[in-house]
Every structure is written in C-alpha cells, then in structure tokens.
Length: 483
Ligand code: URQ
Ligand code: ZN
Ligand code: ZN
Image 1 (cartoon, rainbow, N blue to C red):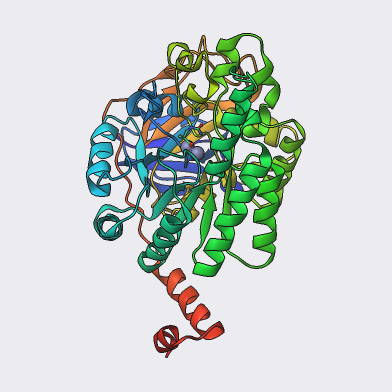
Image 2 (image 1 turned 135 degrees about the vertical axis):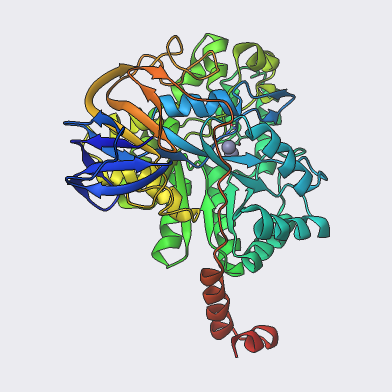
C-alpha cells in the first residue's frame, strides 16, 4: 500500500524544502508538491514537522560474544530500539576469533542478523593473517557485498592486530577497493598499563581510564594513518574520543590524505567522572573503550564534527547488563567493554547539536545518515529523501520532548548512559522500507523484516590512488602498472 507523507519539510544533507513524499513498495516514488497518490494511499500528516532520512549507525555490536560473555542486545531488539529512536539501518561487525575462518565467521553472523527488524550490513574484522584470510577478503568483496574491513589495534591476546597484520590487510584491501577501518588504541600499552594499575591496588572501574589515557589512542590513530599513507589506502577511524586522535586526523586531512573519522554520541556528552561513581554498578556500566574522557575533550570532538574533520556519528552499541559487568567486580580488566545508545543517538545529537546551534538540520542529516551512506558506498539508496531511494525515513517533531531512561527505553540493557537527559526534538514516526515501524510511541517492528544491504567496493578510487603512487614514486613494478 502507498503512503503519502504530507505537509512536511524535507531535510536532506544538502537542502531543505517544503515537499510531500510518496512511498510505494518500500521505495520513495516522488518528492514534491501536488503528488498523484493512488487510491487507498495512507496519509501521514507531517504538518510542521521535518521529513529526514532515517539514521544510519555505522558502528554496533548486537549479540557480540566478547570477554567471556555475549552482548545482551540481539539483532531484533537492537534494530527495534534503533527504529524507536529514528535509526533505520545499522552496520554491525563480524569479528572472527584468531584463526577462525573469515567466511565461516561471516556466515555465522549472517545467521544471527537474520532476525533484524530493519536493514543492516556487516563490516568484517581481520583479526589474524594467513593466505586464507587474503582469499576470504576477496570472496567477501566479490560475492558478499563487504567493502570495509575492521582492525582492532587494542585487545592484546584476543583480537588485536599487530603491524604485520595491518600492513598485509591494508594492502589487500587496496587491491580489492575496500575501506580499512580501525579501533585505534595501542594494545601493548593498554596491557602494560592495566598491569601497572592493578599493581597499585586499583581494581575498580576507576582503573579503566587510567589504563587507556588519550596518548594511547593518539599513538595508534597516528600509526594507522601513517601506515595508510605509505600503503595508499583510505582509512576510517572509529570512535575517536580525544584531542589526540582528532589532531592526527586533522593533520592528515590537511595534507590531502583520505582519512575519515567517526565520533560516538556517548563521547560527545559523557565524561570520565562516571568512573569515579562509588556505586560499582554505575561506574562499571560505563566501561567501554576508548573510555569516556575528561570534559575538555568533548569540545574538541564537537568542533571536529562541525569542521568536518570527523564525518559520522555512531554509538558502538555493545550492551552488557549488571551481572555481566560484575565479572570484573574485583578486576576492572575483566569488565566486559561496551555501552548502549542506538535508541538515543538521533535525539541527543539533535538536542545538543541542532538546538545548541552547533549543527544545522542539514548537517545533522549529514552526520547521522548521509555521510555514512556515502563513505560506505550505499548512497543514494540510503541517506537521502529522494525518488528512487529506499523509504527509510523519520517524521521529526522538533518540539516534542523526551526524557531518556532505562525505565522506558527499548534497548535490552539495564542501564542508559544518557539516564535522565531531556531532549527536545524526536521522531514522531519512523518508516523502514516504506512501512511504519514507530508511531505515537508504539513500536511496530517485525522480526526478520530487515534486509542485508550489499556495499559495493570502490575500484575507481583505488586505481587512481595506485596510479598516483606509481607516478610519484615509480618503482619497476609500479611504473609498469602506470604505463
Ligand atoms: O571495541 C569495540 O568497539 C567493541 C569491542 C565494543 N566495546 C567497546 O568498549 N567499545
Ligand atoms: Zn572499538
Ligand atoms: Zn565497536
């Protein structure tokens, strides 16, 4: 059945205009005035509201097996909570154990993700290296719509990549036209500092930020950037939390290097005082990596978002409930790392981004949806309200207030890092694939309705880079390639 969203103002990353939106069969058919709607069309009155692309969260971990337990949010409850907050697509992560076959891990995750209520895609992490990994990366790009490979520079003795793996994987990604993404913390330093902090007798959550100071993130961000520069691959750094990583990205971009950055809603608004809460449950609920930072880093992150030094916002939604966090009751290094936010990202960014004057509504769309769609090569299918695009939209009421609380949120976790925050501006209606999945405070998602979204590689971009490298630094092999 067709849906006509009438009387709203369409807000895309590039422009806002008063227009109606006609949706049929999961696709946007037309955007404009006086649209011919077929008989039986359902009308959604958007008078006075904004009609925006549904949010894309490029960084989530639904039902992730991690640190001896499994994240409490699964793909159905997580994509439902996302829809409740105006996010209509997630990009999650396949994270193979070391020595686990990449294709097997990918198929395992695809099985878990089938229960999703809204569209999703999967980055694949490279956590080890041999020729099978090299082969599987090629198969994943050619046959499974994967165009991004993740590298954890932290988590020693688990999923951490050393420089050898980074060099091999970055080089392979360039051959394939895929994007390299990194979790930038120096895992050797973290491992060392964790032992030092424990030796000082500090075992509580307050030890977590002490073992991962900003310099640990800055070193890894800069190292990843330099590796990418020498290997001529574009780079995407996830969850930048501090001045040190932002400065590394800003320098690289100022030199013309293609480096993208992501910032989490949590790091923009939550500071490290949470770790000094005497209540273990509250402090442990905030243990995630990189940790929440001293307040002064938040201003740097906001300015980086405004200046376009970082392009996307995400949540790193990776939930563990109090009994799971209690695994680290006597040793903070054993507290499962992760916090939630997939339901709240859009609301907190609108309130603290747009209502504060930091971002225009168009910039809000860019950083919550369009930029992620462009960087991960699914624009304009996703990330814009335009004829021919998927009908993933929100009817956004800029005056509607919402108080955020674990008591009322739809996330399957017993804590909310934005607990008690009141935001002005929220989604009155969310549509996924042209169906209303949230309206008047009621979730109407359907398990399994979500689709896996293929993300094509970037061959044109990489070829140009390789030719540039060949011309600038000709070597026998590259010179031939350039001729
Ligand atoms: O590091 C990540 O992104 C995953 C394992 C979620 N946990 C976290 O603390 N960020
Ligand atoms: Zn991470
Ligand atoms: Zn993550």
